[in-house]
Image (cartoon, rainbow, N blue to C red; front, side, top):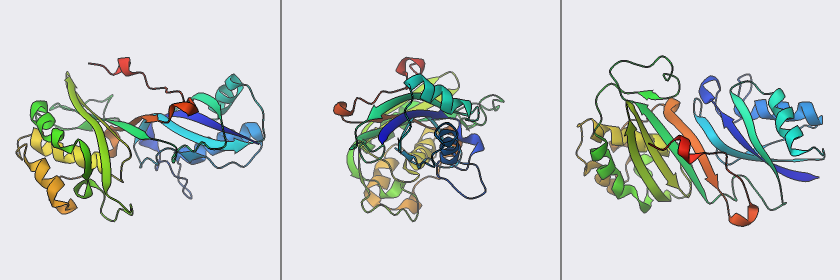
Length: 261
């Protein structure tokens, strides 16, 4: 028996989310089906972060155990042969028994992409949040600065979140504009359900002028989800990178230069 890690990329717009569910297509069920086709084994895969319906990934990481022996190219090409066009294995690595895609991770990084123009884009509509009002990213950056470091993010987690602690450490949050696209780059040790989308929804209220830049700091202090902005749509969210301790030697399929503006 060996344990393998895979780097996965997907467009989540056609799926119910990561987690396997009855009678609806999920990312997990598609990958498990493809693995079964080349191993004849019924495997269960574990991921670094269970993305919601409509959320995308450039750098999802999964692991599974198998008795089958294949070359790296045979694993990637073989699994991809049985995957739909919107899901792809980018790399494969043999890992030791202590590795776990979720529990071994030390940080996660997401991008949120807003298409900020009065007229929607036909090509980007399903992969961004189309927001018509002009957004001032300088105001958004000022507001976002107070979120850095370790804080209680109760105001930004989903209602009914079952996480035992609402404390998270935000490593960075960067906001850049290129043309009509705004990219919010956010990295933390881990995220709660809807945390990124709720942060984005609140920052947008600042960017469009509905709230002052100091409002986000008030939200952080009040620890009350009902006071914050609405949850941004899933269509603009991308899991781009998961980091692990260096001794696991986990590769990354995320290419920073392709997103640099």
